[in-house]
Image (cartoon, rainbow over all chains, first blue to last red; front, side, top):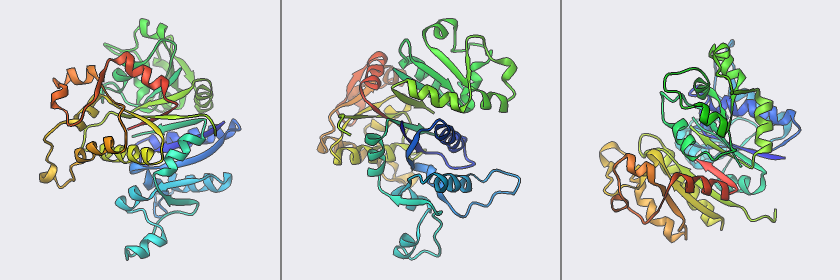
Length: 130
Length: 99
Length: 121
């Protein structure tokens, strides 16, 4: 089956993103396809390249990046939600003349239409909210 | 049929109550994250025998284990791991997330 | 995909203390702009999003209820409110900014059954 996950919780702020990650891994283990991961609301922080937790703690943003790259998953961050919360790629950094960008490799900024598309093209769309 | 997920303690917010108002006979309810506290013996627990006979209620083992609750799970609650959670989403038509 | 799918947006959070109200409405408008069939259900504290006379200027926020009349302009007509949620809060349809259909909890369950894609806010 094709699964899309809508992730609304920031890493470390709640368990939502962790649960979503474990669900995604389990779905892949059961031979499902992850059609899209859509990060919205505070979930956009999962795509930050700057998260630097202590070495003995789980680095969820890095784990997302590894999962996305290992399985070629379409990982989309809602651009409006990202901009609002300070998750930017280089294009937006230049557009808004900011000092840096932090969108991690493997993720793209795009519009809410990608969430709608995920709904219409997946067999299951599951929300992970904080 | 719908699979409902609840991730909050009923002492935190009314997500479990709202879920139970709307849950139809035969649906599934998966308790995850702090929602697993409802799988234990509480005063005024919403998961009465009547509810447990009308719906199948599951609780996510890694969340129970994290919270030290494995020995406290009510009879009638089915335990699942993450792959079991995925398996449930395969057999129900859609997932309603209460949080 | 040839199967006609329809969306149900379920709004359960009060406005202003979190971004859910505003960002859920954004999803509704985009879904409509993409020509999708869409219903919206307000329940629990989500019914507070519909109250008249909101003025968040003192808390430095935009008035998210001002987006609500746009739903009709985008041809989103199927807007439901759970009766139990209104009653628990001593609210009536006269207190709400837009016309809604008040439904009981069983009908709310029916809504969730009838729509393939559930978006939960």
